[in-house]
Picture 1 (cartoon, helix red, strand yellow):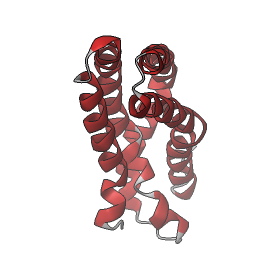
Picture 2 (cartoon, one colour):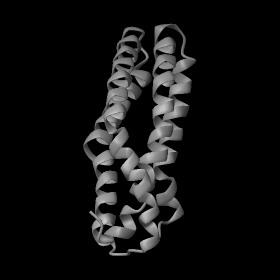
Picture 3 (tube, one colour):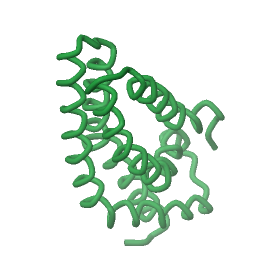
Picture 4 (cartoon, one colour):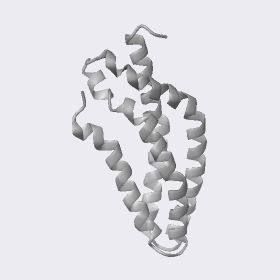
Length: 151
């Protein structure tokens, strides 16, 4: 259904963000502490995303090509769980965004431009998840239900 590159794209992005945050956590000063605070709330959230949102997103290229295998209904458990967890995940985003804003302020005050850019990138990443990735994942589930004649 999906190529290995598609299977790994979002996980690779999460790994890169993990690496960059780890570097920020070793920067020293308030920037390091702020990065550690971000990591403490962001990393568990990323695991939840990888469990609930990413499996459906991996199906998008095949579905867009018109490929449909009834076995993909297995993803419905994930999309239904995502719908149920969405309010909690959005609440987690608020906490993550607060931590990222603190990191941004600390990095700017301590002249750590790369870590300020990282905080800004993560803020945009959260917005993309809320506006595109979570809804797309849920829509994959709804589409699969329609194709299977479920409501």
